[in-house]
Image (cartoon, rainbow, N blue to C red; front, side, top):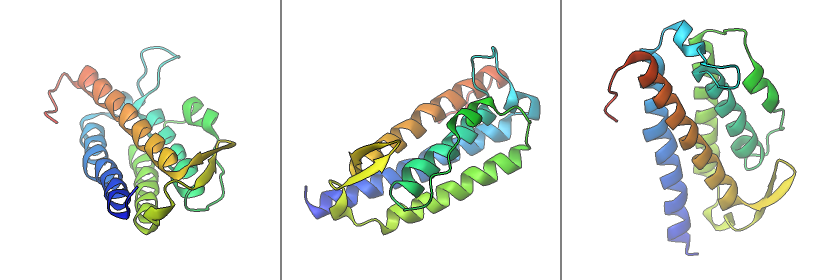
Length: 159
C-alpha cells in the first residue's frame, strides 16, 4: 500500500468516527430522557447507556491499548451488566474522553505501520484490521442508538 493511501485511510476512519458517528450520538442522547437513556425492552437488550459504556470500553481496548500502548483494563461483561443509572453527562464525558484520546492516537500513528501486527483480545492482527474493527463496531452501535432514539421519541432525526 502506498503511504498516501495509508494516510488517507486513517484520516477517513478518524473522520467517520469523530465527524459523523459522534455527532449523531450527541443528537440522539440529547433527545432522550434519563429513563429513555437507560430503557431496554427486554433484559437481553441493551440500553443506549450500556451501548455508550460499551463503545468506551471498545475504544479503550482497540485503539488506546492495542495501538496507543495503554494498559488494557477493559471489563466487557460489566459494560452490558451496568444498571446503576449513572448520569448521561458522566457517560457522555467518558466516551468523549476516549474518543479524543483515540483520535490523538490515530493522528500520531505512522501510516506505514498499518500492515504490522498488533495484539487485541489475545489475538495478533494487523493494525489496519484493528482500526477497521473499531470503526465498524462503532458504526454498528451508532445504528442501534439511532433506532432506539427513533423508537422512543417518534422523531425523524434526518441524518
